[in-house]
Length: 467
Image (cartoon, rainbow, N blue to C red; front, side):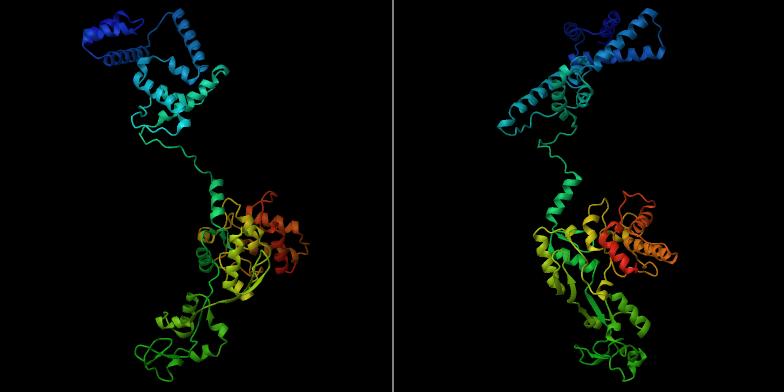
């Protein structure tokens, strides 16, 4: 069979493309299938072309010029063809997919397009064949002549589905949501907004728990509020409140310097973090751990003076404040509409952590990387979060140990203001804003915005530093 095919190829080397009739004759002589005959000729032509390039056959000058000229014409013609026209003009035997499969696929696409108005068509029989190079080229956007632009647009759309190498069930293509759409969805579903950072929540419980755990813990521990001893309810015997020893002597409490601590005002024996209580026990009383019996020292702070930045109403109970703000949020209020401070007493405001002024939250939330308390541990430097932190005392003698970027901005801008005042330089709003941009961004570009560009923040900063 190979000898018969080779003899035919050698006698037709100038045009080694057998017609359908010649292929049928060769198939009969060799007892091969039509596809095997076509594959043999395609492979043989490919091998001869590579051999001709490798051996560097020389051709007459006129033949070379003619070949180059013809190649240029072919290239020009192909560049002006639509993807579908290029596919139509490609030799059938170079098509990896059978013509019958392509015809069935095209017919199926046409039937599906005509039946769209009648509902979605589901078919398990018609599936995409393995993508061939000539078919894949249909989805590539290229320039086409104005006369065939409509055909090109249709072919690029209808044949793009042939790219799928894995057969999947047909379903409607869903356009992926953009970042803006996702953000908009979050804004509509997460109505409860933190009043200390830019985080939002779907449920009121998550919102109040977030503010309590990451911003303002309304808990306190008072050292020995019920005296040096207590009665164990299980044994009904007296025990030392500090070390837990049973039946302590009358002088036992002085081992722990109880009187020294008791003589101090209760406010100095009250701590708002459990680790601060443990530190007090170690330093003052020589106790290395918090005993289970000390749980009765714990209490929750319920009376906290505060205000609403949407309507300026003031509150004494923290629970009333939360219920009031929740109603604002359910009605569509946004933190960008908040005016003024939170109305906390100085002692309570000093307990706020990982926060920023509430009237800056709306602007900060529009940034690329808005400040969030849950991510505060990842932003210990200045970075782009310098607009973000709490507003306690504006005059720091040194940066706080775990300063937020906003507190660092406040500290460095405060140093600049003190130096300028000492040198007799008049501190204008523009000068402070320029220096704030240098601190945050390293340059004075008016396009860059900092907290100092907010009139309310700048006014409070100047009051805090006596400017």
